[in-house]
Amino acid sequence: MTRVIWSRKGSCRSTPYEGNYEEKKNVWGFVKYDGTVEIYRFHGTMKQGRYINMLEDHLDYALIPARRHDPKLIFMQDNASYHRAGDVIRWLRENRKDFITWPPQSPDLSPMENIWASLKNELWNQRERIRNADDVWALSREIVRNFTLVYIRNLYNSMPERIEKVINSNGNRILDR
Image 1 (cartoon, rainbow, N blue to C red):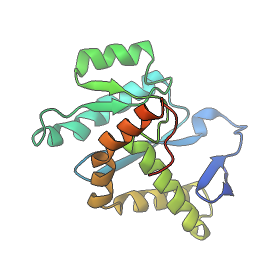
Image 2: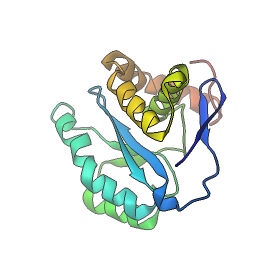
Image 3: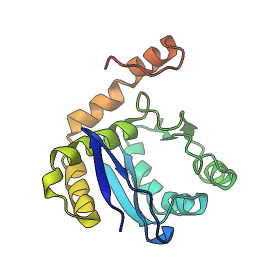
Image 4: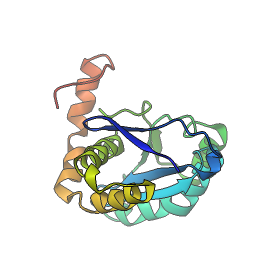
């Protein structure tokens, strides 16, 4: 079982895992403009094969209903190593013509990175409810269900301004949000 260590307010990290990595629990997720935030728990590490399976299982759910409202909708992912792996790029080119990539783990640009940060902060605020990894998972699901449409839309609607700030800062992190 992975232990969670709270190192400072708003931040958590797992201890180095000394067991079988296929037993390690991780989370993958997405956020949509309509207010939907979905997270999925999986065991092991995210690699290109697992990521393609996640996309095959969940990407249409993430995109198709929203496409009715906005035909210009695109799929955005950051440059995590499994996002830019050859098989993943080939799969996206064959199955999705509507994808772009962002810098890795870019909280200034990616709404999902903001979701992860908010989730971690809220887990910190409710840490007394956490006794084990299953508690973290249950509480995480509860927290993401309670993100408001206003919060999520603000993340998306602020993107042009945030992109402009990143450009003006020559790609450096922007601090005044």
